[in-house]
Length: 331
Ligand code: NAD
Ligand code: WQD
Image (cartoon, rainbow, N blue to C red; front, side, top):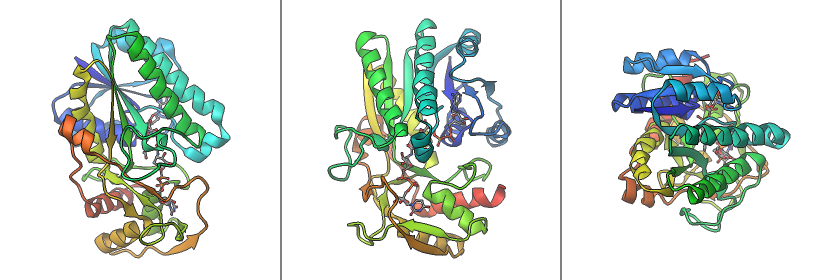
């Protein structure tokens, strides 16, 4: 039996593929390469010694997806594929709703038609909107502030409705906090096109001299040092969370888990840690708050630990060092 990994050449998907292959799991990758490169397959092979079967296929291509299910014995899908840029989603809501929601509908329809009923979905802490308090638990109220987040919320609801209607389905919703870092080989990592939106890729490009300085978006939040606080988690810990989540797929219905460390870390903490572990100075300027940002967002990650036996183990030093190792080896 194989696991189909949609979005498997992307940032989190590629690390998860490596983790699954190293654990002996047979995988098949589907990706349309709209935000990743075909070379990632070479890198996965260099790291693991195994080249996974790959289909360049779009979630919107029903025939292409049918072929993948026809040609492989797939019993589980890990569904990463989707567009993820918050700002772009505000400018292009139609593209985001179509790609993420129609794409997921196509996928689950194909799964049902091929008797494949186990699904792990990449959700996001963004579905908690502006949380009433931290740490955030899975049963907190849900809301969103941008079309990207709304696609995650709608897909969660679609998958809940699916499980009510068809008790053969078992779905795990994983709400990721802020994945950063890279595999220790430096071969795979976060490599956004253009000017990065997220903090860590921006920091690594400042470190490389590609960007002149970092803008710190606000230092007047009600946090210890005034800058935003997030739950940064090493992407390899996040990857391992998917393997742990397979366990919950023996339960019928929907299970929901936060994947975070449970620790709040500020923007200045990131800068200071990055400078200490790499020895590279990060010039920064305090800039106005970024619209839509919240002061603090970190997980209560105890449910995943208790029910899945999963816990993040890698610290901030390793996150910063591995992110820089990746950036320094890539153009
Ligand atoms: P990524 O862009 O690196 O990977 C997504 C992959 O999906 C890319 O390789 C892209 O080519 C592919 N893809 C997109 N649309 C597709 C389509 N229609 N058909 C086939 N392939 C398609 O992103 P990532 O950071 O690895 O994120 C993976 C998932 O996790 C996404 O669903 C994202 O929304 C979610 N997520 C990411 C973060 C984060 O901070 N990176 C946080 C929370 C949730
Ligand atoms: C982190 C902190 C910024 C850039 C986003 C999405 C979320 C999820 C993860 C997918 C904040 C500050 C950032 C910069 C800065 N993705 N910052 N200067 O906003 O927590 O979450 O990615 O689901 O949906 O919204 O992550 O890395 O953008 O920001 O000061 O140049 O760094 O203000 O406090 P965020 P981020």
